[in-house]
Length: 445
Image (cartoon, rainbow, N blue to C red; front, side, top):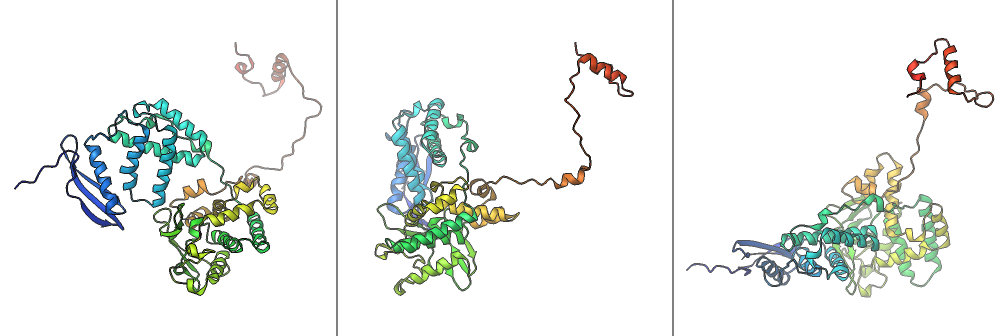
């Protein structure tokens, strides 16, 4: 008995397999031309994978909810999110970030029809984004819009991507200066933080934890704040002075704080060797000793939450809150003002840039070492986005060897003489062997 032919937009038998801890689903369907097409998605569960496959099949069949030139930008963003973003093997917070940007673009420009998104109109949208958002956020919004419009071209709702006609956003014009603290400013900040912890009793445990986090960020080579609170006891070998950086702490509003394996990008996991006298090592040891005996399992955090009833992992927003308070203390404000900085410039990320800048300027090959400490894949990222550029000092000692310096210059006696053209010519004729060519003396007619 022959096998029944699939209808246009109908899904065949769905195959489910395990891949990288997720469910990989694939199936066949027929597009609007009757051609057999294979579809695949990667999702967290079977329940999530099946709707994604069905939506892809409908898109190929030109079902009523398929995109068309009359569809709105909101329809496009929603379809792109469901078909592309949710099928990507990316971190949950990245998917959440895309959803946030989609909601923002949809609330501002979602009613515009795709057929009206010509280059001039899209250019106005991009300019409005640049005016209403900081550089980094505007770049992410522009990238999100560009990816959605590319999806519209693939879905045949647009003939071309109007973003291709626009000039690229110049990073040099809008790049914010890489602010970094000097060694003296870091010392003032740490001393002020110690006073803040010692003199205040309110939220004493959170204050102390925040102080330790600052030292961990600096001492372990400029960690991200989500990395500094994500160490398990099994990640730190106090005897060998070795720390395994392999995870971060994640927080979603309304959900418990949890730790996830893996860093921001693939390949950033690294082993950090630190000495016993390193401020980061001292902070890690102090945090480990503060944990009660029943909370010292291998998988338990080194930096325990002040109130573990709500979970063992600390919310990264807690130390950020206390860093913001200390940055406004008079001693810190005065120290920051010496290099033109304000309290708003002092954030956990500023500490990361400060470590990169200090290491980069300490040695000739410091940029490469700074990139390794920060976990960057290339020196260019570190140099352009993290290291504060300083005014170079130029040594003219080589010129002293190349050019004689024993010639004495005597100033002319009296005021300078102003000669007419005829007097100048007469003086040149009287000079022996000093006459100039006749063509040079005669004015050009």
